[in-house]
Image (cartoon, rainbow, N blue to C red):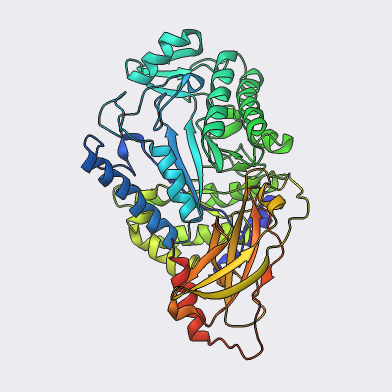
Length: 493
């Protein structure tokens, strides 16, 4: 009854108030699928010209995502026991995925994961390496054949498909080592675990409790391995969209805990997952009561509903746009953020979903939530924020203590601008640039009359107090100049 009443309140609130207040902190994520090039790439990297074209396809996607204020990209990195980076011994020497060149095992002659990380960070966005865990492709495909040769006892067959066996301890060890190696080698912001469950097509399991323990063991080993390497890297998963039956609503036999043995609420309560992206590709009573159920079981974990942007397409369920906008607003009222599946349906503006997010729902940037488990030491404030004329350009500069810059994972900077002084850094409308690595920024000519503030932010997502621009009393800033400033600075690379 509590879940039912809470759900009704949230629905009424979203209907009566079509736009929730814009938050400064909110996960706005996208699944960017490389499987069969569904979202990227279209061009195969077989020549130098095509390598550059493939890279530009990705940067064009990221530009479009940045414009819509998406702040988190779940980039499919392990596909089907195949990878989109040069795999090493620690990652099982898995073959290159065919999406890059058209041929499994063929190198694209560059590192797409490193490239994607750099391009996301240039835009102030996080990149989480999306790892497909248990499925390893067709029995005779390159990835499955490779694992059958190297760890045969950890591989099982169901029909024509190969899977890593959750009951075999080698599976947890292999996947933990794989994720730890990526965390060590790359500057990822997160490790995102997909299909960390039993296949729904499996005919027998030892028993339900044992099966859940097997999956939980894999989750825990990966979590501990990643955190041992870099404590600030977020570990997330994408479970089935309904955790289990609730007291009032049935999952109709398709749920995480009882059907595929993902005991996600236990993971959240034990603190062995940082973010949960439940795949909630439903509507009506199949969506809202289960959204509330996830929220009530979140503990200290961040829950971000995965929304099926693909369901808007005429070739899928042909949902009206209002169905998706209602889900977005209810999720925001619940403090949950959103994650779209998939990128191409969003960037192609299916049924107007991109336009709605860009112009109405998320017209201003937002910072991803900080890791709640980590209580930060006092983060020093940047100092001496000034504006200078140098070589015909106007430069904003500030200082940061050298000892602070040596913080684990490094320090970055958020830039705020306003037509009033002091700059209100709690207002997302004033956030114009996120996670800048330098201690300076070029100010466009049309934005030189704005007021500025800068904060430091660490890799756990904790932000310092603001250093306000040093000004003289006669300085003024018009509202028109501030609007030019926000537009110009947000698109600055």
